[in-house]
Image (cartoon, rainbow, N blue to C red):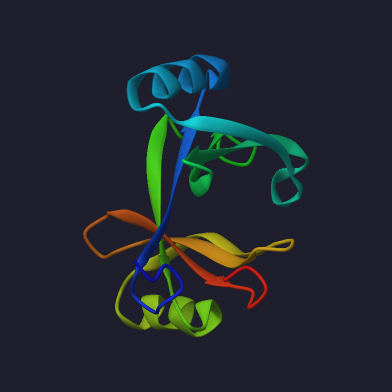
Length: 131
């Protein structure tokens, strides 16, 4: 799968109230390994890279302070060529940007959107060095 191609699902991320319990559950269920890193985009919160056979496939983190009403949930990211342009198009098409355009150091730029029916998904443009 070419995760940096426009329109491709490229990352999955769990926001949870109990990171350690989630890490244990998914490690035991799927055999995932975890690598803790500091998430500079979210006020220095710990982020856990999820890996399968050494390949990064997603992440697990605590629900961030800016989203206290969010319950535990998995989210998906779709790669876009230009996340700023895609965010503008979301609005044109009747959707809403619910987490503003945000830079993730050394990774790329993302936002979270809600479609006109209320479904939520994230869009990301990766830095060329990340791909």
